Length: 347
Ligand SMILES: NC(=O)c1ccc[n+]([C@@H]2O[C@H](COP(=O)([O-])OP(=O)(O)OC[C@H]3O[C@@H](n4cnc5c(N)ncnc54)[C@H](O)[C@@H]3O)[C@@H](O)[C@H]2O)c1
Image (cartoon, rainbow, N blue to C red):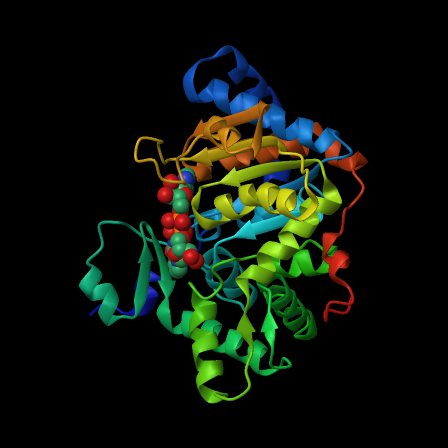
């Protein structure tokens, strides 16, 4: 009889963009067609964002990106001042990043497995990747522990994730050589997860609120929206680098409108690129084009590019292009986490 260890053998390895100079490859794509040419243009727009000293770069993340080996790409972006704020789904930040920071791993599997057998062994599957469900439960419990340690009141997800970074720091650092939650804590890069309970953290918060019915920590997603809007108001010129769509994409596009409501006149996002597999025909947000977003007054049309590609292929090329072109060496950190000093988080 097969046991768990037979399935959880070979770990997913995170790609290291620092190791591969993709600049000549991506430059050569400029004279090709289809997705190669759009990817080239998106990479050049990202490089332009990094060169524009006024520009604040917001990275949005959706999809199972870190379980698929993209965690170190974002870690390197944070550590090398290539991003100023992150807006993500909870699964990426909690179930995948924080999970690995606690010492757990994702494993190479197959989509052709017997899922009933996986269920019996408490192995979860994300397409061709396996996760130990028992380890995920430890991740749920740890977020409950973080909530238990906090003063009971409503928190933005940014505040809560900062506390998760502090938790890792107090435990002697992450038990993985790259954690985005921890890197963002060290580098003062705020992370927002507007639908924070829709992931492992939700299970932790359910435990926390059940055990503390009168006084407990809760999440305030309007506070997230206000805080992210404050970054827009502070930064003025903004560029968005979007992987996938979903809530992170819409939330980040909408801060232009919120800033406009608060201060009368806000600049649209000056730069915008999106990598996605969604198309526009269903009218849903994830596949809506950036050109369409300009009709809503959210994105300027001069520097925008959609790239129709699965993220594990396109993201290392675009981020790697930005890294090896080196414009980040001349950027000043925006350290937007510090904007919120005095709002209960002490840095
Ligand atoms: N993905 C998971 O394994 C997982 C696990 C637990 C909880 N959740 C929760 O479910 C909600 C939805 O998250 P989600 O991760 O499924 O994203 P999502 O369904 O919101 O993704 C939105 C869109 O992004 C695009 N996209 C996603 N992955 C892509 C990729 N690899 N390459 C290119 N485009 C891609 C697709 O067009 C998709 O429609 C979140 O709240 C998340 O926390 C997800």
